[in-house]
Length: 284
Ligand code: PHE
Ligand code: FE
Image (cartoon, rainbow, N blue to C red; front, top):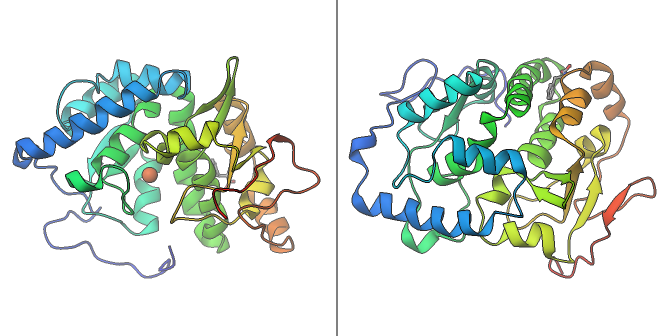
């Protein structure tokens, strides 16, 4: 996240925009079987937990078909729905490259799949996280616009030196967001829906805080990358999220953030609107 002004060159075999071929035909039967196991267990667990738009996306993109999805086929379906594509990259790409793809409605995905002994936990994103976690919501028109706007905002944040503040917005929405629906809180963050453990923990465990989304609050809040979150933020709807972000000018937001202290991942502030005050028992 730091090398902002260095124009790194893509690794050998990658295009100037860092994309590579997915090489779908090179996946082994075992690779596809791992996808199928992960898919079966998560798709059984998510009804009633994931938000409506996510579940609809799984369905309309026909992600239930066996095996690791072929990005070309998946992109055809996604393109017809919201104009997005899924493109393969060798792993993490530089920030400006990542944002530029989003700004052009291209979601970058890793191609490798975890091993059978890593079903529950993996530090780096694999194709299951990237595709099962992120792609279903890209079939939702409002969410699709949010992701494009985020890419444009990401490029803009670089000139303010504010990337790490904007990255917290991504973390607490795109990766770990909750949304309030008529039936109660639901999951939408890709890091949660792709995790067998966290898709229970984020909704049901008494440990974490569940706090109403507030833009400045989120952009001040540090996060942990090594374990379940200590706080989740709840948006009222994707329309509300888009309004609070895409329709706002972040220049004054970044300026205001400069004089506001960061907030610890487990903190609760007097002005927070809480859905749940966590016990933090899990984190201790
Ligand atoms: N509107 C923000 C800006 O002025 C960009 C942005 C859009 C950020 C959507 C996040 C999500 O920089
Ligand atoms: Fe992710």
